[in-house]
Length: 265
Image 1 (spheres, helix red, strand yellow):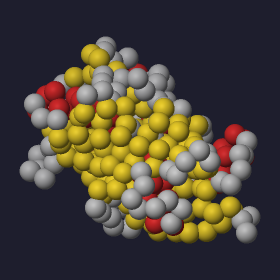
Image 2 (cartoon, helix red, strand yellow):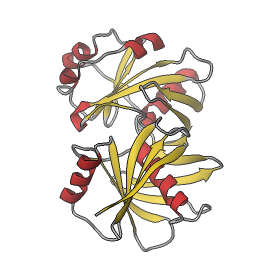
Image 3 (tube, one colour):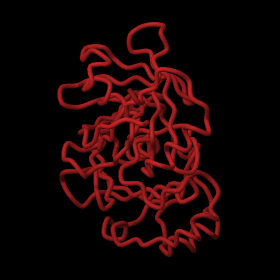
Image 4 (spheres, helix red, strand yellow):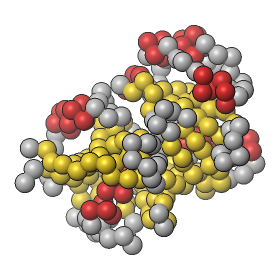
């Protein structure tokens, strides 16, 4: 039998929405070049590789690759991985997944139809935007900050955010992993909206980005004065992320649905 792989749409319960991730179940260690080749072949924003550690139920090594590079943190592929483990029966429904990653141990637990991820908070600090960023976005920001991985840009309206058409070639000259653009939501369903661009990692626009919400959660919690918020990532596919600030951690809530099962030969 070949290596089992599934494709999961994360941060949605509707197929072909949210953010697709491939989840590859490994029985043995594979080298980095092979994993990068699989991620390039899948051509999704992230491919996750899972391998049981053998030191207890739910203890799992997890790595994430875009088509271009390995990354240090990915929310939607972690959500997809937890969903795939429970759905396939590889992990009992009542057992939490403890993912051992380049960003430490990340925990996923079931909450009814939702999955909650325990991720690090990544608060931003005010920053002077580089000229390349201003030029590539062609907007006047309300605020610009810099987190561990990304720039955060707040715009004055949701309409401006949705109308944004970045110059991706220009964004490739901006240092760092990517750019989060956000605004307060104009809909009562959500507290804030966002979009995420990471052309340096082979992703012009990511459909729904869990790790970006590790920046957005402390930012909007501070601005709105509430630790529990609902975000909507306003990409073409769209997705809902529940966030709850918990000290130096962020609880990310989302749903997921499997759309494809197969094997690598």
